[in-house]
Length: 215
Image (tube, rainbow, N blue to C red; front, side, top):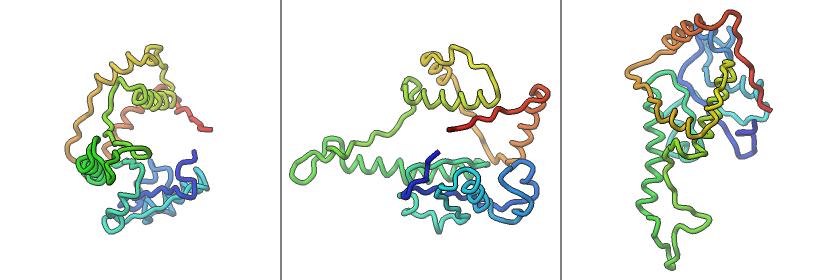
């Protein structure tokens, strides 16, 4: 994969935590000699060495002093993979502040039919009036993303894919019937690991996840 491998690309990761002995049993990037080191620093070094040496990656265990307005404004994509509700809510609020609200302010200041100096339309190529993305189970592009992610999961766990799954109408109805779980309070990594261990007891003897390689 070539994400963040160009001269202009950069991946910034952060995680305000250090590696402990208890992490070694389920976080495969870390080794016993990493105990006491920042998780983000070790993870970035492992990713650059093992995944793609051309990856431009920067680790920073700091938070507010580094991740200021200029930092958020420079981002194209934000991926959140956090282990507790408080941290997820924080990231969601920052994303709302620096991306969604900025777009809303721009559209309020320059409506779709606004004109610039010289009475020319403000929104003319290469500028396009931004339309906030709203997920739709009937949008082919949105469904394609859901389908691709789902196929990766079922292929990994070697789950048969029903023929009806490839029908956009059937998949759209299934997505509409899904409901997000309302997570309240703190969800620790240990709690998640305990649930995963219970699931493993239901797997067939000798089960192994299928490795999916990307060319």
